[in-house]
Amino acid sequence: MTASETLDWEVLLDRLGEFYHAGDWRVPYLRDHAEDPFQVLIGTILSQRTRDENTDRASARLFAKYPDARSLAKASAKQIEPLIRETGFYHTKAKGIHNCAREILDRFGGVVPQTLEELLTLPSVGPKTANCVLVFGYGIPGMPVDTHVHRISNRLGVVRTRTPEETEAALRAVVPERYWIPVNPVLVQHGQNLCGPYRPRCEACPIATLCATGRALAEGRNPPRPQDRPPKDRRPNAVGPRPKAKPRRRPVR
Ligand code: SF4
Image 1 (cartoon, rainbow, N blue to C red):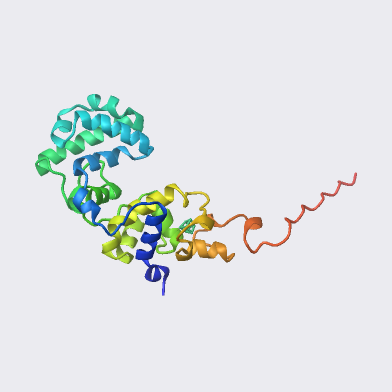
Image 2: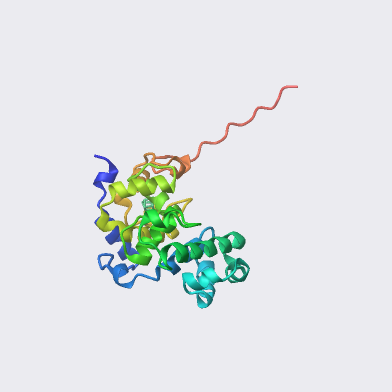
């Protein structure tokens, strides 16, 4: 049996939800309180390669002036740029979100589409953004995979993938659909805290017993990802002091 077949997603979501005080993931909160799909879409494009605080401030400024596809489509890229400057790559992003708003207006009557296939036809919209719109904009099950979800899924041992796109397809196959909506927010939070990119803090992790990496490191075995191996002298099975370097012999003259 593989790790993906044995992982109990319900227990994983319970433990992480409790650890981060995220509330009960079983309550279909997003279905009742989904955010404005247009603002989720544009906000996710703005969030690419920047920090959450920058996205939040830029989004607030942008939506105060252009709250929907109709108003944003009428603005020029030059009018948009100063509002989103702090998110970086603002020339490209301004052009991208303007074109996106135009297409939503022209092709979908100003309403953000609700299918992955249609969303992926919009400019600047990739798989992660399209899935975010489904989950956070419409409360429809989707699988947004960013760098955190990709990394943690591989550490858990439920997928063995090289890119977020491969991870999305693999997770769709192994995670029961009733868990899709809470998976992203919970794993992103975990990735921003204990399960960061460079040194996961498995000793403090509430899901270490469910995780292939946590179990392997505790038992002194190799984890699924070679880059998660600790340095040799810090492995649990390492005994004794570090071996001294051999003294260099003086060259004979
Ligand atoms: S046990 Fe370690 S690698 Fe696994 S989820 Fe927890 S922090 Fe990440």
